Structure formats: structure tokens, C-alpha cells
Image (cartoon, rainbow, N blue to C red):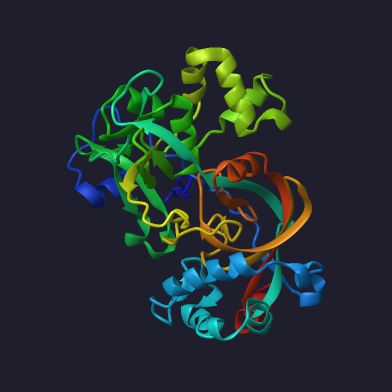
Length: 404
């Protein structure tokens, strides 16, 4: 699902200049509102190393079915774009869509292993000398809800409010492509949108359903989920928008306060702490995270299809991974190696198809497990250092190594 993180802005593009373009400001208020956070640090450039297939020891034993299914979906999106355009807004580093379209055109003629081996080259990516990064997991929760509040069902699932606006900075400067600001208009100023506390005290957004506070909070963390009403009707709560505020981990907060040990800061551990400490502690802890997610309801005609990721495609259990698209484009197959729950030394092939609030920086991933109790348990306890090897067309691999 689609989860969310702090929105980057740039020192040379102030909120005031954006406001001038968006709403033709004619004057400044006496007390200007705070500006969104500005990021100025530039991470190390990636270094690429071409590998051979036998450098991946587990390759002959890998189940490539989920990755092949996920890549087929990415191909359908890639095939709809202009062939001479780059695969992503990162620029030409990962090749043109035409190069990927040529690979996609041959996927149905070959078995998955033969297809990947004959059409791709494995390339190890390093940032600042590091070839590994943090891997976590996520899933699509099933949440019991009601159509009216009552009993323990006191927390709303909200639709996107009408006053929430987003600005694509790439519309104003080419080198800001892919960067967005989220906010609202107050008077003649474009300002940051409300934080969680203020939203929860307001009537922002129509209420779509009512659930238990802890369930709705974790629904927002996952970014989408399946809502199960009392009469058995099941619909998907699909990500519609977030409020643009930074994501703060409540698990990390509990560890910092000494309430939980690091190994206890899983979803189950947090829920146990909330149950023990009651509603007052629940509200106080949730307020630590100013990020708020809004949803839209969608029918669920095929329960075997995952939710749409940020790339606009249904996610594949154990075949899709969320990444920071500022470092790795959508649609790229990746060989991940990590210790998963019950599977030390796991290796698998996944495709970059989503992003998330906590998924920021190079070599940072979030593995999609699917839905149901098993997916929830595995996702909630996944936290491992992972090795990353990207699979790219041969022509792209040659350019990547020359660029390094």
C-alpha cells in the first residue's frame, strides 16, 4: 500500500514563490505561517558493479513466479509511455522506456528464469560504499468497521477533504520533477496542511466508516486496507491523500521513552502496550505522529488482487517492494537478500512498485506480504539488513558501469 514521509522542498523555491504562481498573492500577512521542511543534504552518488548470474548463489532455486507476475503488470504501464522518454524522473541513468519496452515485448515468449537471464544483467548498487539497507514489511489489513459510531467503533475513516491541495513542483522547474508540496489556502497564502491532532478535532473530510482507534491508526500506517462491515460487505479503503506532515514512528517513540525494548516494537508489541495503558495513553501516543492519511472506498471485485501501489498497479504478495522513487525507479526487478521471519538467509526477486512515508533514502525497502493474519504477523516482525542487486537491460547495464 501506499504509505507516506516528509516532503522535500528546496531552499531556492520558497513557499512564497510557490504561492505567487499558484494563487497570485497580492500581499503578505503580518505573521507569515511556517514553511514546510527544507531538505538540503545530497546523498552520495550510486556506484554500480556488473555481476554474473552465478554471483547470486541462490539464483537457481528462486521462485520467480511472483516477480514475473509483478513485472508483467509494470510492463503494461511502461508500454503505454513514449519510447524516447526516460524510465523515471531520475533521468537517463536507468535507460529509456523504449529499452524497457523492448524487454517487455519478449516476456511472454519465455519461461520466467530464461526471460530474466537472457534479457537482464544483475548490477549491485552502492551508495557511500554501502550495498545493503534496511528492509521492513507491510501488508493489507482487514479492518472491522461500522457505518455509524458506537461502542468501541469511535474512530473515523476519512475521505480526502476538499481544502487539501497538492502542488507538483515539476510544473514550475524541470529539476524539481517528482517533488510535491501538500497544503491548503488560508487567505492568500499556501500553507502546510493541518496536523493529526487538529484534523481529529475537526470535520475535515467526509466520514466513510467507523472503526476501533488502533485499527484505523494502523490502517493509515499501511496506506490501504479492506474494510469489513457488520453485514459482511467488504470494500477496499484505497489511499487518497496524506496531509503532507512528516511521518513519526510511534514504536520508535515507545523505545525512546523506555516503554518497549527494540525487539518489542512490532505491531503486536505496540497493540499490547496500548491495551494495557488505555484510551488516554492511546490518544497521546498517536498524536506523536502528525501524519494523517485519507482514503477513498473502492469495490473489491477480485479478492486475490492486492491494492494499487504508488505506481498505480495492483501489488503482488512477495513480488512487490516499496522504495524511495528518488533513488530507484518504479518497474525495476530487484534481487533482495535478507533474514525474514522464519526464513534466515532468504533471497527473492521483487519489483519496485510502491513507496511509503518511512521509505526514504537509498537501499531502503518495504516488502509487500499480501493480506490476512499470516501476512500481518510476518510484516509486523520484518526488520533486517538487506542486500540489493537490480536487474536492468543489457544496454542500461553498460551505461551504468561507465557512469560509475
